Image (cartoon, rainbow, N blue to C red; front, side, top):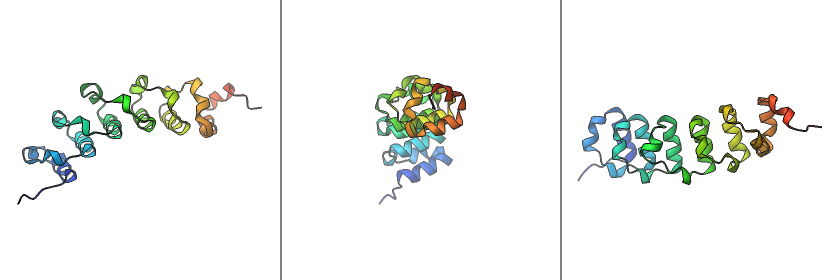
Length: 148
């Protein structure tokens, strides 16, 4: 009887010893396992069954390897608003693919706090309850609001 390893165990093995690939039981890796493995070992990208990755897996993987977006056809159209917030927080170069007007206040605040180049005046009112926090961080926008 074969002593099978889990996908997570294979990820740990392959991260540190990619030469073990010929022994790997690739079908034991789920999408999250692939995301973690590819963060460490891009050499396995061509083996990846990309359909196993969730949009959250994609968002996290693109933090480390934004070049995978085009090469492996990232399904941006399936991203949730939180996937976008997580991605744009680290990778503002993908902002043109996202309709920022569909994000909520917490998501926009996360993005704007770490990527101020993405701030758009027309989106500031969408911050809702995070507006006060935003204006404390970026007082130069206070004049855009009637505070009387």
